[in-house]
Image 1 (cartoon, rainbow, N blue to C red):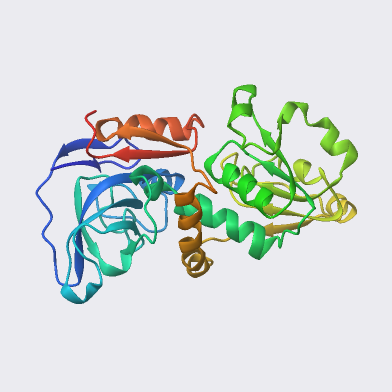
Image 2: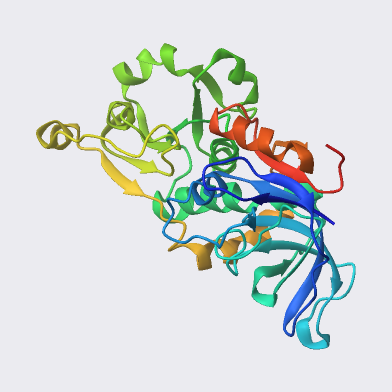
Amino acid sequence: MRAARFHTWGAAPVVEEMPEPVRGPGEVLVQVEAGGVGHLDVTVSSGEFDMRPQLPYIGGVEGAGTVLEADDDSGLAPGAQVVLRGGGLGIVRDGTWTERVSVRRKAVTPLGAPLEPAVAAGFFVPATTAYVALHDVAEVVKGEEVIVVGAAGAVGAMVVQQALAAGARVTGVVGRADQLADVPEGARAVVSADAEDLAQTRSASLLVDTLGGEGLIGRSRWVRQGGRAVVIGYVAGPRVELDLPSWLLDDVALFPVNMIRQERRAREVSGELVRRLSCGDLTLPVETFGLGDTPAALEALRNGRVRGRAVVLPGRAG
């Protein structure tokens, strides 16, 4: 079978032939139909993450597929569609960028409703992060005005959809004009360079920011005094300088979304989100790559050129 493995920290993965996995006690053998490619994969493969697998290792911290073999008491029948996540996948052990994998039972979650494999492999982070950010952290209310920064990305687009479903009025901010069409229908879409009116009117009560970086505090001033800014990511940079007198005057609360701490909550709400994706209430854009194009998927992700989630399909040539 083929797999995409990292042999050197910071280098591109190599697609090569691997021995077939042997299922151990308490494990589930899965035919991998799709493997997600995310920022955590980039971070782990840099060698600078606190947890590191032993080189060489197969990348991919999440994925989806069908069960081939499992213990009788596992509750998983052959052919069941499952999501692969957790159990150290792609972090301390081989991950999902492979045709087949044997994983611990706790890393396998059966789907309650059918999804396309690429969507099943990529939905968990954006869908659950959006839910937790809006409903548990920000406590969004019907009728309020919400600004979503990075609204064309997988997480941002999911925030837009769920905010609209909660009855909010949404403005989606993107970095480039060619991304305007990727903002979900129902939201006002604007390019960040043309967002002067947001700072002037400050009519919004909530900002959901997926970018982070040095511009975060400036964007928080798009929200009225007494409002709140929820910070999900740091793809635009990991640091921000805070001038305390100005921040106190702005009077906008900054809330972090720590999805590591919220993992249990994310799993609790994921079933309902799967149902909404399955029936079309929510949509997740995905860009698919063949296994041989895994290096290209990673490069596109680093350069911010992926529309939605990047997903590797091990069964596709390339």
